[in-house]
Structure formats: structure tokens, C-alpha cells
Length: 294
DNA sequence: ACCCAGGTCATCA
DNA sequence: TGATGACCTGGG
Image (cartoon, rainbow, N blue to C red; front, side):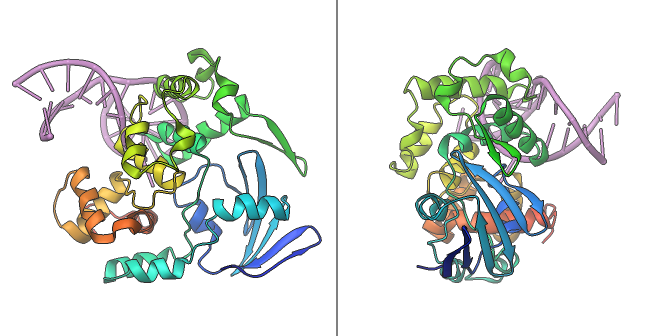
């Protein structure tokens, strides 16, 4: 077990964990439903489970859960069984990645719920993170089951079968614009069994891409995000404007098509390309790196 | 008024 | 295949 001094005290779970930082993990663009409720403390909900996490340096307190749920769900969700020091060492073979991994040394790639991740990244297209969060939140508030946590009203992300009757008009309220059609297509295809979203973890990366591309509004970038952040496909290298920009600037040194950027990433980092992507994305976006600027 | 934001789709060569 | 616009919406 990689987490140390791991024990239960007064209903809370305490642990010492290396290479884990709440801000870096929750603000690195991979998830949209974790919110800071106090300094050093985040509150989140996934698959109907609520979790409050407080961080003081490398020590963590987990509240709102029980040991069984923590071990069976959250440990995998937060990827706490993985040795990130080893991953960082493995991919930091040149100065750029060394710098990026030092900057985001507390990032962990979450294993999120597949359906929620799919809808969230459909919404993310040609959009900004602040508004993506707002839309995902109102989608949950409108259609998801309410869960109370210490007087705070949270909402689970609505499951496909719970919203099978949803209409375009219903979606007007969440202000997602033209993406409403895409969400409806996803709901329909998942409910009809045309797309087997719950099986993407068992599929290969290539099979997963093929499956996800059946949905309108899902292109290569969204598919890669779903596979990396919820499908456990760490070879996935989602190429958005930031990753394109930073990969070109640091490595390829010229304008490159997304498909070729992915090819480069595969040759450079192979099965760890997804981790590399996340360190680069966080580094580039937090520092607002422009094209050509490093 | 215009541009942009974690892209994708439709259309045309 | 590859290039080009259009696209809801909210904020700067």
C-alpha cells in the first residue's frame, strides 16, 4: 500500500500521501465537480458518493465516507494505489518534462465515472472551464438525485436511464447552447445500447475511441479525455489548444496536426503519455504560455 | 461591436 | 484526406 499512516479516527480517515495535491489534482482541468469549501479543503461527489478532503502538506483527512467506500471506490478514483514518483521519474527524461512534473508534482489522474465524464467533455467543446463547470453543475442540480451533506445540498450526476425522457427544451435551462443536441444523442445511444459506455474500461484504447465516436459531438479530443479520465487509458494523449501549443513549442518546434502530435506523444512516452499530457497542460495553462513562448 | 473559450460538424475540393 | 466557417453562451 502506497499511502502511509493510514487510519480511522473519530469516523474520519487520516493518511499520509506523497505526490498528491488537492489544488493541482482538482484544478488541472480533468474534473468539474470538486469545489473548495475552505482553505485546503475540497468537497466532491462521484457516483452518488460524497467526499470531503482536507490537506495539510502531505497529510490528508477524508470525511463523509466510510472505510469500505473509501477503499472500494475513492482509492481507485483518486488513483492512490499508484506510485507517482515512479511515473514522474520515468517520463522526466529531458528538462522540459522535469520542469512540468516539478510544477505539478501533486497531480493525480482521476478515475471518474464514465457517463459523467462523457457528458462533461461534450459540454467542454469550444467552451471555457468556468462555464463548463457551471453547466455541469446545473445539469446535476436539475436532473440528479439530491444528497445532503452536513446541511449542504449536493446532487448526484444523473444516470442515463434517469433522464431517458429528457427533451431539448429541458436542456435549455442549463444554457449549454448547441451542445444540447449532442447530449440528447448521447442519452439516446447509451440507453439504446448503441454505445456501451460502461464497458470502455474493458476495451482497448482503440476500441474505446471507436465506441465513443459513435456519439454526435464526440470527436477525437473528447474521446481521448473520456478514455484518459474515466476509462483508465493512460496512453491517451488528448490534444486541445493548450497541449497542441505546448507540445509544438517544447518538442516538435513547428506547426503540427493533432494526429501527428499524438503520434509523437506515443513515441515519446508510450503508455504514460496521458500523465505527460496532464503535467504539460497544467504547466502551460497555469502559466498562460502563448505560442512560441516557453 | 468583436473576440475568445479544453472542438466538432457540415460542406466542398 | 484537407481546408474552411459556423456555432450557443457569457465574459472581457
